[in-house]
Length: 371
Image 1 (tube, rainbow, N blue to C red):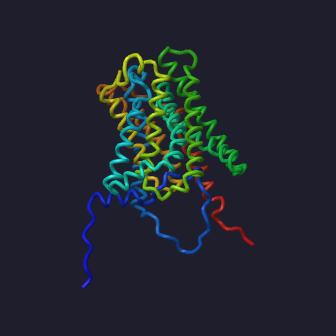
Image 2: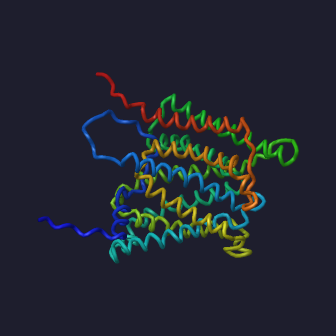
Image 3: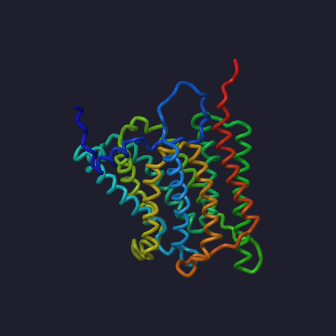
């Protein structure tokens, strides 16, 4: 009789999961669907995809909400990028720890292989700048406005891919991207004007252009990183995901720390953990969860579901601001928002336009051309 294989240990099972789809590279834009051909390898089940999609939306919506909750009187009381530094430190420790558990000393050596470390380090510099800009932007705007403006990544990625690869969008796609940009701008202006009327009893808009500049710069760096990752990390796609994270986060840690010390006077004057409390620790934990869940969940989501998930997160954040935040005012320093039809309609315009762009791009070549 055939001998039964002993059940895998929990550690080995976790290592096997992390070695599946072990690639930091992600699709930059929704790719056109291919015409049906020969049967291919079976992808993730519908249940797995649904769970991955729900986790992705939850993480993408909770992260800005947690940063909003950590504010005191509308400002971040701690060094803005200090949670990013702690996040990188924790990720380096986790990556090396998992490598040792899964592969012993040989696994640990993968995390410090100098050849890929040079490539990962160069890309990590841009990622660290992006994280720094995200915290700067979140310090002057709310989570909903930030997530709305984050959708500009579709337009900026299209421009970068056009410049680097010569890959152009169709006229219809450019029109949809322009509509997204206009919808984002309209939402931010309407939202900020309402804040000004609420705080001053009338008057002009309190729109802070620095917040917009920080977000656009953050999106630019993120999109550029995605292009560079897809271009240069093909040679290292067989590295386990934990080794990639450990190498990427090593330089990420030092660049984040350098940016914090250089640009945050409060940290140099009052200390690294000045202004920290339990809410700040949750922000750092949120950064850790966002990173690892992205690496592990996205292998079960294609670029279409990823972009739709980002759009759905906008609705989730807006729903929190309108329906839930008011009930937490006595517990956390958050302030609920009144439901306003103009803001809601602009949110839906952006969300549905993002979904339209994603689905239109995916189906543009789904039907094979007739000969």
